[in-house]
Length: 144
Image: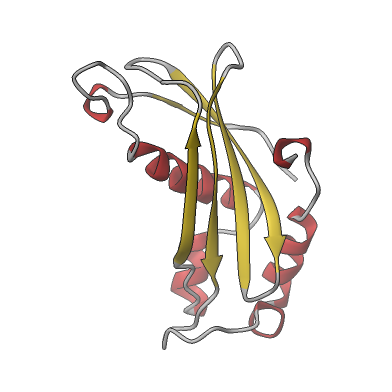
C-alpha cells in the first residue's frame, strides 16, 4: 500500500487578492489527491469507468481550514480510506505545508454506481477492486 502524500505547488491563479489560496480550491486538491492515492494503490478511476462502466460520484464533502496556504507554497496532501461498505466509501484528507504545519483537513464520501446511476455491489461486479479497497481500510493516525 502506498500512503505517500500527493505533492503539488500552489499556483498564482488559485489565490485571492491577499495571495491566499481560495477556500474552494481545497476541494479540487482533495480530488487530485484522491485520484492519485487510489491509482497508486491499484484502483484506477479512469480504467474502471472505461472498462467496467462503474462511476464514483461524490455524495458529501467536508473541509476545515486551519492555516492559510499562499502562492508558491508546496502542499503535502495525505489521504486515508476511512470507511468502505462495498457500495460507498469515505476518504480523509490532511493538507500540510512543507514545514509540517496543518492547512486543512477534510473528507469526501463517494457512491459506487453503474452506468444507469444505480448503486452496485463492488464485491460482485469487480471482486479484485473490492479486495484492493478492503486492503486500504485502516485506522490511521491521520484520521484520529
